[in-house]
Length: 240
Image 1 (cartoon, one colour):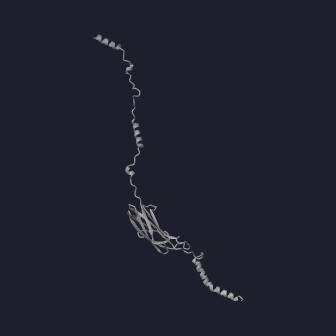
Image 2: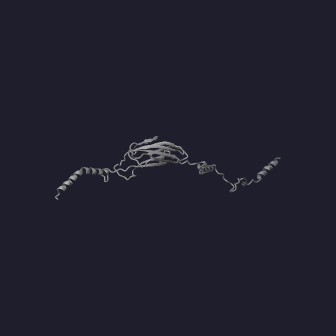
Image 3: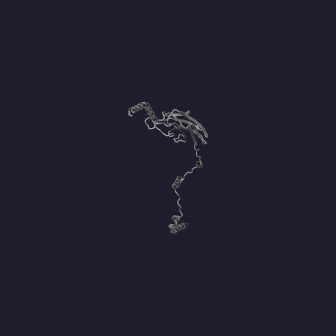
């Protein structure tokens, strides 16, 4: 038995070992390995996609209806075509809202004629003092399709250029009314009224003036009798 064990050990020692290449790790075939994308690269791609996205307007916002346009008209008249100093002009202002929506806080302003010495306007504030600076201002809501009427009066004074002369109809008393909406400085509608002022003559000393004719008539009345007596004496002294 002991002899058999010894023989087995001797035989195992003399047998050749396995080749070295048999235990070397096998290299993967070329082209068979595919690297996976890094997590950082995927995060960068997500940020780039978010930056490239442009949100589209919603259909409701794209088709929102525009607010209705304001349509207002105004007219002013005093019922006459001529005027003169000391006369009072009574104005009637008619404002018509033609639109389907109400206009809140409309401002109606009337500029009085340049020779106005005093002005009154029920329900309005009269601004300015002195000739040429009178203005009436109303504040009113204008319901849809509604017509409102305002009244004002102006008393005219003398023109500044009384010594001047002009053709009839070239000098006029002008009143202007405008309607302003939403505190705008640009009027929505305006209207005006014109009245002819009488022509004035030139003062004495100007050719063709009434003053010159009056002075000439007075001189003739004073000097006429003396001139007649002098002519008679001269004729009596002349020898026949």
